[in-house]
Length: 355
Image (cartoon, rainbow, N blue to C red):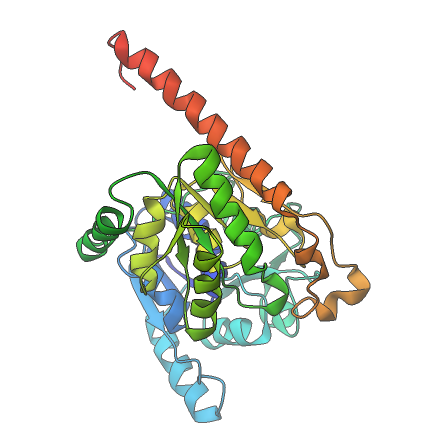
């Protein structure tokens, strides 16, 4: 019987990115299996054209607003006939879709602070209590229920020609084909916002110490105002990035020398496309959502007590505890390491060895 494995991870953009290593691991383990993913429209943009994905089932955000809408979505998923589902979201809505799919094997998490919540631990019939802290590693542990043991982290996010042309045009026209940095001012929660004047200070540091102009990313009117404030306070060291789609953003970030931002979708996207990343972590545990990988640095100076977990979307104190010097030090560590690596490559090249 053909294996048909369906990933359920509906939102948000950052979480979809962080779940992509599960898709890659499934393809390595089951090269002949059919792999599908149930997702909402925003995250679907980043999964379109992924080389390891056979089918993408895109559900409206209104799927759970009426019985009729849910029934229609469940009918589509059931028609796909999965033999197993991987519930990476761990909520009632994700596990209910897995249950409605008719899959005989429904993999999910045991109850935890962030996983296996609501009704998911009853609707998923195979569960695991992962030992790892980071969301990427926890997702990979979930595959043990399918007999897959792996710690290899891959994202393999594609890049389309049109997005490459867009990014190359921005680099040529705004960065004059010179190495550049990116900062991202936005975030999904107020508690993950860092002040514009601090981002401006980072832009001045990156230019004065490393010769990098900074492109400031934004999305929507509110973030546009914050990004413009960064540019205005940067003393000419930053420029406003153009409006981008998620796919264009992915290509632009790929070309940056370094990325600086808080715990949000673009930061996780930067890690996924292997751009050296400084991630500022506010209310969430850094060991769960920090930028994973040796070339990246996570910065967290204060944490939110477990007793205040309900305030993690609004309590700004952990984010505001991160100082300009903390971020400059993280940037300097990454860029110094990159410079040493480049110097090493020059030496190797000069004696005729492949770099």
